[in-house]
Image 1 (cartoon, rainbow, N blue to C red):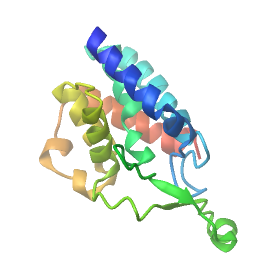
Image 2 (image 1 turned 90 degrees about the horizontal axis):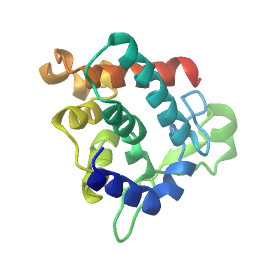
Image 3 (image 1 turned 90 degrees about the vertical axis):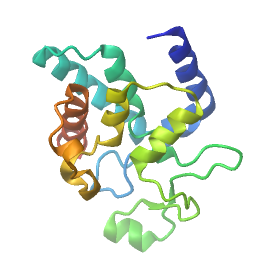
Length: 180
């Protein structure tokens, strides 16, 4: 990893680390890592699985790319950045919703940026000058794979990009098998 990129990632975590390390990965109890710190927990699991997949598949994907993408693919779940940052979610105040529906958090409707989590993640990385390769950018943009209708495009469906596929598998395995 270049010194420039290390510096950008360090600056990002110095400014956003408090938010990153307390954010949940999901809003409902039935989903993956729905607890304070869940985002970091999930992201570390993605990195761990992706590194193992990369080794097993003997690809030419760099471990640096896997670490950057794995750690930061969902950073958009912290919300917005800038002068007046808005959190992605808020604590659910209704005890009925918490107890009956397992809805521990609610989406913050004050965010109003119209971005998906991957799009917001990319915006945050751009704001902190974390330069990404085309493959890293694509891996973040499509990390949810074909579970999302907006990803059912030829660019995602038929891509042979090894990093994107490794991150999709690691994200899915982490969320659906390890963390529920």
